[in-house]
Length: 251
Image 1 (tube, rainbow, N blue to C red):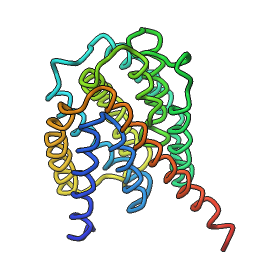
Image 2 (image 1 turned 90 degrees about the vertical axis):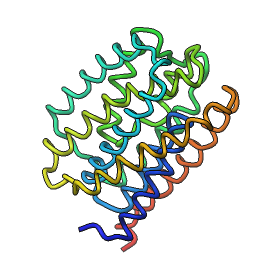
Image 3 (image 1 turned 180 degrees about the horizontal axis):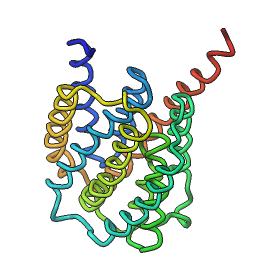
């Protein structure tokens, strides 16, 4: 049973992380995943994260609907379905330490990828690969980190097109993750409807408040700040995940 204090903390966390995602089209979900994993079991965290991110990305996609690159979305969706079918077959559920460490490592991998190797969401094959890889990461770690963003930064897209197109693509991954962890992995992971309503409202408000900030940023500022935020989050995930992994050995 969720307490009033916990509900307030969740609401504030979701509002603030939706605001960050509304500006950069990323990072907010990574921060929220870490917060939820600290407050609840992995399956429950995945479910609430999925509800929140679907609301946040769906509303963000609507706000920037004129900037969406639909061909990229279509090919991404094809890859996303491939990954979902594979995970529905094996029914794999990761542990909390593995999830956190995976998030940290994947974040650094995305940041350290050389420009010459950077894929582009505008290329058909890359878009399908992005859908397959990133949806797989959704099932393992809850989020896909900057590897997902790398497919968008590799093309000639402006910050508005990146945020809008990425939001629609994220709807597929989070929707499938939500179904996976509620139906196939853990029926007990279902969350209170009031908590879900709070999460949806807070995520939509944070996304709306972020729009004027994104308008003020230049494309260069967008990329610089996104890199800084992801680096800080990756360090936290690696540190916390490693701590949880070795904690039993220290007992």
